[in-house]
Image 1 (cartoon, helix red, strand yellow):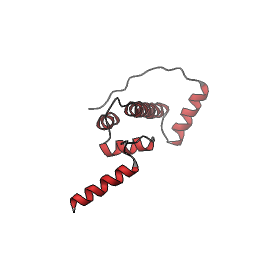
Image 2 (cartoon, helix red, strand yellow):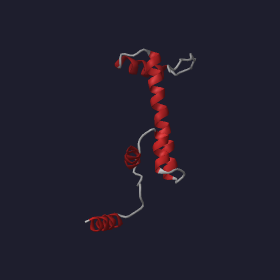
Image 3 (cartoon, helix red, strand yellow):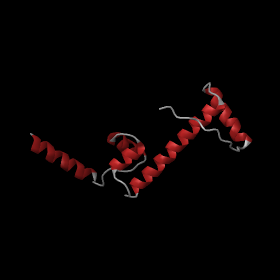
Image 4 (tube, helix red, strand yellow):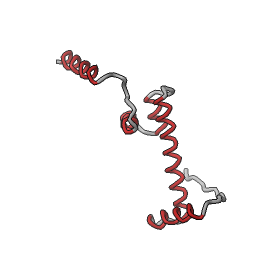
Length: 107
């Protein structure tokens, strides 16, 4: 299904419009396309920040975060790691101990 465009009017600062036009020119896009791209990027980034904050505050699980970010479980872990958010509150020593136990039990 093709998404239909809706025409809207927006008031921008002259300096902001210059930046948008520069963005469009560098990418060989028209102004409307550039604005759509920038809005999409801004909305994704805002969503990312909100999801990261919700995970940090223990309001959602890792799987819920992945779904809200439209990524898989592993990529969600990477995103959270980039934000400095631990996936587990185990210490490094506890992780190493568990790894040794798993290796011992597996072999």
